[in-house]
Length: 114
Length: 110
Image (cartoon, rainbow over all chains, first blue to last red):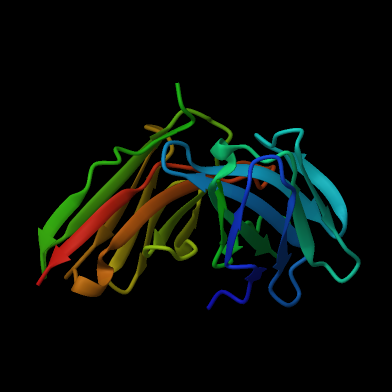
């Protein structure tokens, strides 16, 4: 158990809908990262938040957005869902000290868009 | 050219054998190198973490980094059926964004 929690475990929805994925980092970690894992693309970095502020963006679609709240939990919002958005979505956290980049992953949310 | 290349072919070995996995990369800015293990339908689990070039050993696992060749390796000695999983290499530079390889599915046959 990494100490990172994610809810829900599974999500089944229809095209055009909007969903919210939730992540709680390990105790004391200020950084939260979101990744998407699909069979063809592998694990892809989406976005990084540090202590409530966006720090880096990766291959994140405009239909996707994220935020980190004062209690450090984070939410990933996916809207206007398409079939191709079906994937595993992982959240990771780290201490984000200088030179320290060990990222610990949660169990993931499996999203199925029908 | 992809930032991180990991031949995604499956690997089957008999119990007790040495498993050898490797990745190559193209981004010279990478300085942190990791190996993750991922069991089916689970989140990636950090196995090894190294900074810059060199070797690191942890029990049956050895990670090697050769920055001059842009090549990293993971060796698993005395492999066990419980080592059967997908192994992902990952690396980052100063921006903390992890770039992953596609992963190798390893099966250790009892």
